[in-house]
Amino acid sequence: MNAPANRSARAQLQRLKERNRPTVAFVLDGQPAEALAGDTVLTAVLTQIRQLRINEFSQQPRAGFCLMGACQDCWVRLADGKSLRACQTMIEPGMHICTQPAGNQGAA
Image (cartoon, rainbow, N blue to C red; front, top):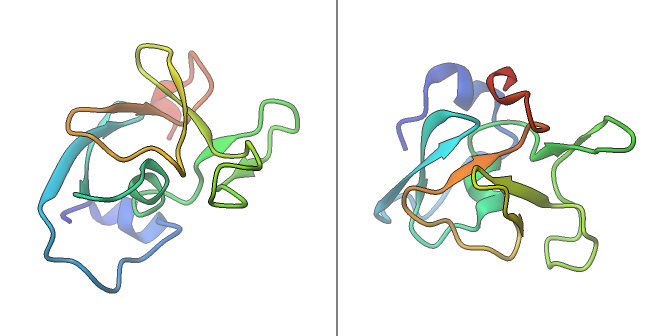
């Protein structure tokens, strides 16, 4: 992946294996990003930045918890307003993922 240097330095996850899969272009908080085919949205986001979202109640950063869809901690929004569980949804080309609260999209 060719993430900008400032993003890769801030990433929560660092990819160690399986780097030879095809890339998938997507948009993360209004910025172009790349993941690898077969990544979940959670993996795609956390290989770019440190947090998945901000908790709407505590305002604390969240990065997923159970990683299997039981805890409800990995919900993110798409640009069209649809919500999805990042740990159970596969990244798709052209997805527009929003990790910031509505109206805060340039703040990542």
